[in-house]
Amino acid sequence: MNLISIFSKYPTQESCLEHLETVRWGDNPTCPHCRSDKVGRWNCHACKSSFNVLSGTIMQKTKVPLQKWFLAIGLMANAKKRLSSCQLARDLDVRQQTVGYMQTRIRVAMVNRERHLLQGIIEADETYLGGKPRNGNRREDDKPAKKGRGTAKHLIVGAVERGGRVTARTAAKVRGKPLLKFIKDNVEPAGSLLMTDEWKGYGGVKNFMQHAVINHSTAYAEGSVHTNTIEGFWSLLKRAWYGSHHHYGVPYTLLYVAEACWKYNERKNVDPFGGFIRGCFA
Image (cartoon, rainbow, N blue to C red; front, side, top):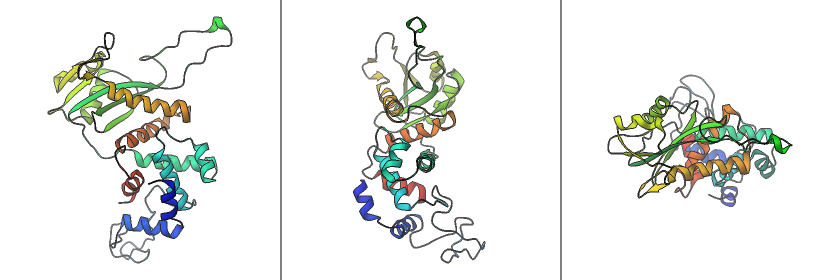
């Protein structure tokens, strides 16, 4: 749903509330605290608590008009290479600090809490997220930039189904045990084939599932054996860093990665806005 559609379909606070009530409860409202259906508007006769449709959601106790929340969600969902808080603040005519808070709430909702095990042909890889190194003012101070494993950048590990979903998260170290745990937690080994590069950390994969390796020192692909799909996802993740955000605080890196995963997984959805609202309220 584009911005014109959102603005025309939900022009007032009341229309936004009605839509959220329909998505969350339909014709059978329940108390978000005790799940009782013995409620008035909006008081629970069972636990005697007050509530509304926003209770327990990312918009709880918000002072920002709901239409601006809807527009923020629509803008973020449609921005392939992400949207900075400064740009969104200008678009919504809201303070940048307020928009940063809203974006954090929205990204928290994008974190995949359902355990979808990847199946089929899976590609796994790791990448390092961070700015380009800055050299000194004098030429003799220039040093070769350290790249890849061993750098101080944020480490991200990920896996993707060919033609399907992706999952990724931050990691502390790129060693065998953490990598194997990530794969076991996110990949269905029965009937699946995992493709990785030649990094020795993936050596134990062959003990519990099929494993194909592409040696990047000699080729980027050998027939159908490659990791180009996950490399493409890393490219989208890094474009957001270079083009919009420029810096991620360590505690928030996972949320930016979650946003990238959510957008990739919703790429075939004709209504990502509606999908996000249903995921938050249904």
